[in-house]
Image (cartoon, rainbow, N blue to C red; front, side):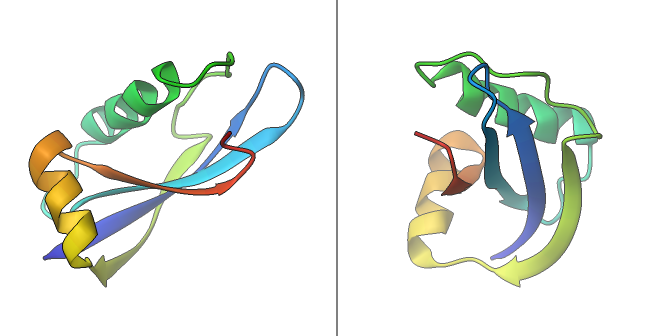
Length: 87
């Protein structure tokens, strides 16, 4: 499965900036849908964050998904790769 990678940076209430990628099937191009996936992820965090809009989240590239990513996408519609200040 080919996935689109959306590079995302969101401010946390403590001043840190979260950096994570939102991965979706490459045929999903509606930004509102992708941003809603990101908001769903952020709602599960134990701390408050800023907004998630096109200022914080932008398409980066297409890549081949691993089996674990495919399983998550089949369950939730998206997959998150946490990189910085996500916990």
